[in-house]
Amino acid sequence: MTTHREPLSSVLETIGETPLVRVHDSPDEVPVYAKLESFNPGASIKDRIGKYMLERMLERGDVGAGGTVVEPTAGNTGIGLAVAANQLGLNAVFVVPERFSVEKQQLMRALGAEVVNTPSEDGMGFAIGRAHEIADELDDAVVPQQFSNPLNAEAHYATTAPEIGDALDDEVGAVVAGCGTGGTLMGMARYFRDRHPDTHVVAVEPAGSAYREFLGQDVEHEEYKTEGIGTHDIERNELFDPELVDDIRSIPDREVHEEMGRLAAEEGQLVASSAAANAIAAKRVARGIRDGAIDAPYETVATVFPDSSERYLSKGVYRSFEEWEG
Ligand code: PMP
Image (cartoon, rainbow, N blue to C red):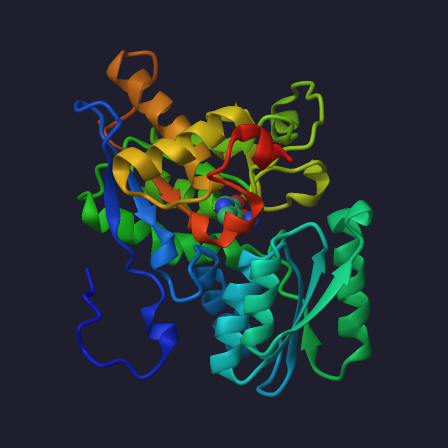
């Protein structure tokens, strides 16, 4: 692992090579390891795709230096893209539905990006349309569109997954990750399936989200508080390949809330709701492997903790469940 002890010339060089830490509350026989993605400079896993997508798009000439990146994003992707744009000489405009964390929008602005809010009730589909309209009005602008851009999953195939593989000698029995775009899970699944075709792959979503419709199941759509994962419109999740997935676990907000508190109190982990959902699902998969209910080539489960709880304190993540649900 790179230690980053040598002097670096740009904050972009600090992206990735995050620590992989044991989740204590997982079986000794089948430990769960989580990649702590809040160690990235923009404090989330999305710094990886911000850097990777913009570097590749500049190389390919999709956008030139001085051009503009326009992305509809709930937040972390905006921060990741803003950090990269800031250092790669690009302008950034983000289209954000109002209901998402104000903290994230403040950080995007501090990094020099413009934030355009759209009404929450119009949803993400509307924000996507608005982003394309803005890009069309500009001279040299590109919409990376994380929901359909293969570079998103590729970033995890090229960085997140090999870092986990190196730390665990490629002996990863199962990969478990919450799906927003599905980029993280698809990149990790392809990398470890290339190494062992029987790697068990599990997607995680909040209860009320519709990812299970990919498996032909009926889903009752409901709102959820868990942030950054889940979908209400699987048509939009173009990166998600159900063929690569063995199972989809839907975790209720109440369990996520309890696990967020437990991770902080018992494991010193100040992680947010999607990390807690991943921890719950990964521990279940680990127990399944231990008990023989799940076949996996190795007795280790890998997941990610995408960001930190600090980003959501104003939403009451550590207050009572009722206060968080608001
Ligand atoms: N957790 C958080 C906090 C996120 O912001 C995201 C990205 N929306 C995810 C998990 C899911 O990552 P992906 O888009 O790669 O599925």
